[in-house]
Image (cartoon, rainbow, N blue to C red):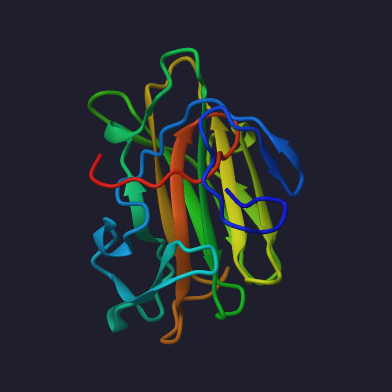
Length: 220
């Protein structure tokens, strides 16, 4: 976590965490996104290219993603990293909230990042809803049948230019497993251009009503 002085710090077990906005108290969480700090292993679309990787000012690895030339002019949403519904969070128990989060930035004006929620009932995948953030003005747009059950926020750190983007969905009793896709989206009403690019870091999918401190995952 980032402490009050802006320093990346490892928290000890049961150690109070004093962040910039006060005392942070968290329960036990699991980040369901495998290899969360290795963009080369993310299950991106074949239309998305991992252009470069680097390490941000907090010490985490990010990926810069571009699109194949065949996508120029397209209005599609393109997967960057995914937790499918069949491997998602089980909402049949007491915890009904699922939160997706990542950090995003881009120099492409009005390009958007999309967090998409789906349900898996054991045999079928059903689209629930999504949230898009405009990386230029931080405006947020929700859609889908479950839009009224989704909350979202986007906060920009002016020093590093990273936008922290998170969205939470509240599951219905009839829903089973909820998965999430982190996606590229072109500017609203426009198609993909040749220079489009998006940076993504610290993606996380977890049960709970808000994003927790980032949890690094590997193969398990």
